[in-house]
Length: 168
Image (cartoon, rainbow, N blue to C red):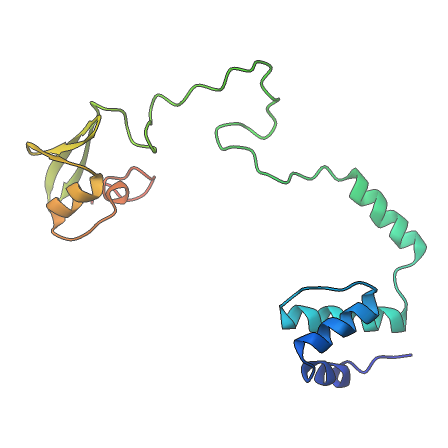
């Protein structure tokens, strides 16, 4: 038996969500709470075709199961500081924080960061509780960037602390 896909598609598009869920339950033998109309229509059409034309052979099913069991799938990517091939640490001591960056990726207190703005080199000193620029303390790098440019800027971007921007 062959499924007339355009005709079935038109019929499914006329159904309400409740009717689509009922059709899904009829074809799959289980209910669904899916609210995505397009997904439901596609799944129902696929199932209708699979039932009409035959599903995977038993040999194909067994091979797919073998492949799925042999797959070494990673559900969560490794942290960027640790190579993917590194073994798990043997001690219970947490890894040391980077000396280069502290408090939300900012350089440690005492560091002087700079940028060129309109041909002039500007320097900002990182403090424990803010940033000092030309004798004034600011709460954030964005506030410093705004004082320099007169408009709102992302401070990290302006001073090149996220790998982009910086001296312009």
